[in-house]
Image (cartoon, rainbow, N blue to C red; front, side, top):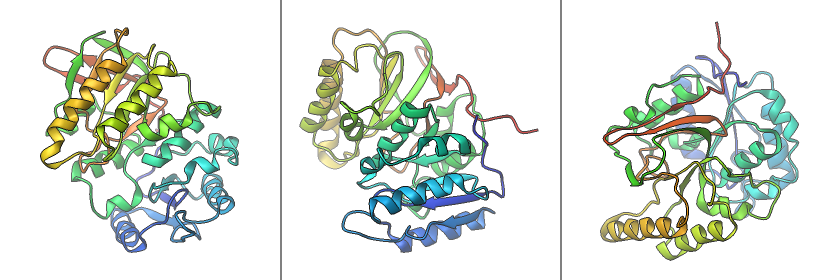
Length: 313
């Protein structure tokens, strides 16, 4: 089981994907220090090599070094971007498994988080990136992320985000306890055909993406359907897709139509408008942990089915 982040613990920050805005990172670091955390940055966290933060070998070794570092309590990605998939064949997943540290990332990091689960059943957390603690997140999203990584448990996670009301797009089982796999839809699709694509049978799948046009989202959904991975889910949860302005309402209606069309012939419940995605209001979700999802006529509930953290006396 994972060891929770201590109240005065040390957060190790690396950049396994794209280059980081160092000004934003420094503001975020100062904020985390003000909360009492120690910070350890990898040498190349502020680097830039084309659209990557550094060469593949450097990004891989710096990621592994934080997991191996006994002084680090939480491994946190500075940002997403691109390039994480290049590391999947290089990583020694045993190092990540043996460290028992929580790992937090999002978006492009979906590839790594799902690979960690596929290779060694290592639980991680899909949520805010380190630079987002400088700006771009609601206060409740920041607090929820840090509390969750510190081992907190909530009776109903959705109660922490009262301004967002998930909707039942299709009914099904009223209570589900199943492993949850959240992630970016584009990155999930990119894992198909690789050994790092998990078996999604009996899984609560949570998807999000950012500013992709509806026709591309439809293509991604049907790619998953045609690959057979949507047929036997426990539930499908649809998060934020980043649309705003005059076209948002129409785009989300097209998304709902694509989801229903892509899941014809199945009977599991489908939720939409879930507070998970690239928006300011964002729930942190575990990757691989059993979760309890309850769907009643007037209430949707989400809580741990089984906490991934060890109990600390």
